[in-house]
Length: 178
Image (cartoon, rainbow, N blue to C red; front, top):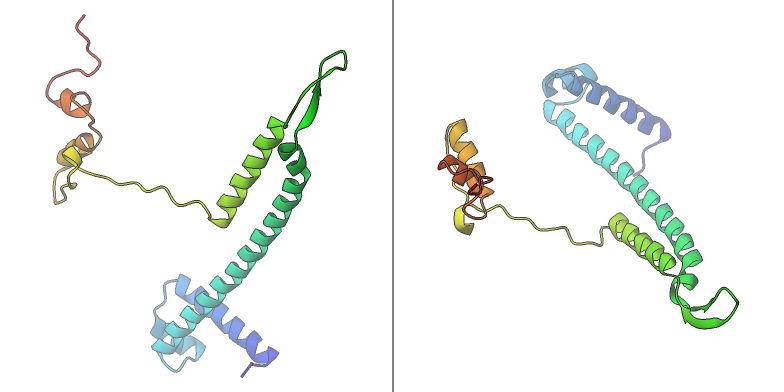
């Protein structure tokens, strides 16, 4: 059942106080006692509700922004589309028609607009990266000294016989026989 405007305002004010007290470092029992919650669990639950409501409001704003940006991209793409897709006549300096071609700058602009739309809407798959240890194996983990960790970092970046490991063995990777 929807709450009245007065109840909604009261809830919003209480939640604002709850967040302020929590940010100040108070525990939920103190917050419950101060703001009149039935228990510390009720105060905790109300904080979660407040955060979820805020997340929903942010999500709605992000959705509105995304829609607005997509409409702007649509308008720009419409303005460029014909020049990027329809060959236009090319003339010499003395006015002789030589051939037809599309406007490559318009194509480039269109591709950049399409890339922007893909990023805005999350259409591009994220780049997958993987960290591996020596010879493509697992990265050894454990407790170790800073020097040991730096050695592991050097090994992880090693691609051949040059680099940090070679330098550790006394070879200078930049030292060509002079």
